[in-house]
Image (tube, rainbow, N blue to C red; front, side):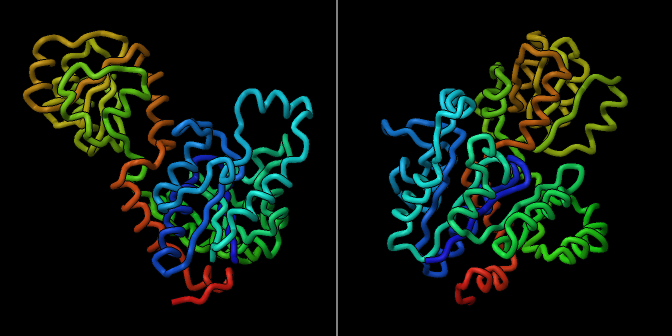
Length: 356
């Protein structure tokens, strides 16, 4: 039985996407795949059983139905944190190890997924580095591009994990960064014996969110064209400028939501006629009847929110970078994106699997 730990340099880096993609790839090769997420930070009840939200989801995608208490033996809620900070949790690694061994039965390969970064959970002795060491797992670390890469973090992790770190995946890489990556950063990392297992390009669809989900996450409500709430938003533009300047910026933005004050009917109308994905009206100000009518006619939803424009823009920025991988179209697209980028010949060899 072989095993792989999937960690990352920060939260929201694509661990679920990589775990599902690799799991499905190995299943297609004929291997019996198991899954574990030792520490869950998103407690959720399902059919009367507590587990981790992400773990439930990954198991479903991989067609697994293991006991959630085995898959995620540690659930982090406020009570857990209070006990941990008081030193009342004890050593939980033996429990994780016991569950891991149970899940390994009849499996060819186990995928073990981390939570947060590789050092998240250090306060209670359950960080990714510690778990990977305790279970003696080969490890892949995902580094997601966010203005820059965490190359220092990757070198620290290589020192900490040694030969057990088989490489890194660089995720969400914008096209403009490829030259610097190829000419400088990848050669540097590989000189530190950090094998780059794949470079996953930035893809707008992977950060997209449905209008209905957007309304819920912003604490707003749909007041027009609710039947079109399955439209997908990939980015946003703020409509605080003069109409002429707004038109120039808006024409360059595709599949965008427009965040605009409820009293700016001039910008609202331009956005509607320009076929925006949706309007997000701030300040809890209702649009006038002309705007509502055009919205219904054109089939463009309007979301009404209480917060001001810049507060909503900050929320949107966070949402589009952290929105969970849930829709079937995202799973299929993400799986293709990941599996086409990864060096499976190297990964199979590092894990001791026979390559195709």
